[in-house]
Image 1: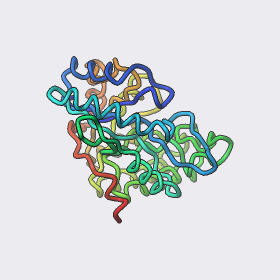
Image 2 (image 1 turned 30 degrees about the vertical axis):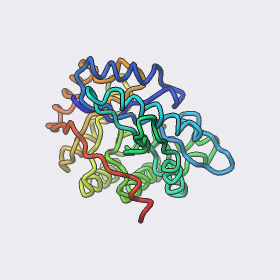
Image 3 (image 1 turned 180 degrees about the vertical axis):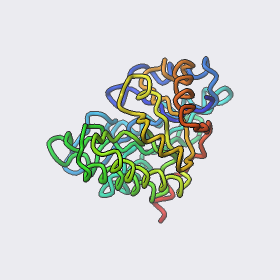
Image 4 (image 1 turned 120 degrees about the horizontal axis):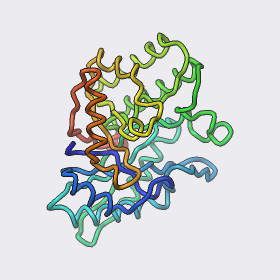
Length: 276
């Protein structure tokens, strides 16, 4: 692995370490690109604040910190500034506009702001619906086909925007019902990703911490549909950035299904969406 686009910071409230520590680890492990994609701020109604994403008022500081480090390490590492973001149709465009407004000018004269998005659909609907959003969490156990269909519908909506450079942990949905029902809906997701040229991520955090994803059944579907596949460190601590043991585990997992891993990703400019 020479390029990782899935790196978090302390601002999401469940990651540790400084951005510099992540960068220094990336350099030791031979990465050429380190993309920071912390859990995005979202502009919700009535002051709703999520506990697992950065707060909106932290956005400019995120840009400023990463922009300064990008300037400092420009000769040794390509640093990209992005977000891992859900597609919530009711609030998506407003939040993109907010991200644009928060861009900063650095002492170097360069601008720092949103460069890319990866799609991580952690909740279905608009997150704050229901009791604290808990019942809508994509990774909860469910045998409800409507829940599975809702997850896929949100992901397909995100793909239609053209804003997302890849789908993070596309198999986060934890459907425990019929295999055939799972295959029907998740094949739809895989086929839509292929049609839009959007890679699917083998998530190294899930793989190496015993989570329910990556789901072998999903990756059987991916092998059948022939999607582009990437690996993402999903680093919430510096030691996960480009860790050789984690990368070998990801390569072995991909090998089980005959999947070829694409290392570099062509990043899409999500701000073009605002011009449409």
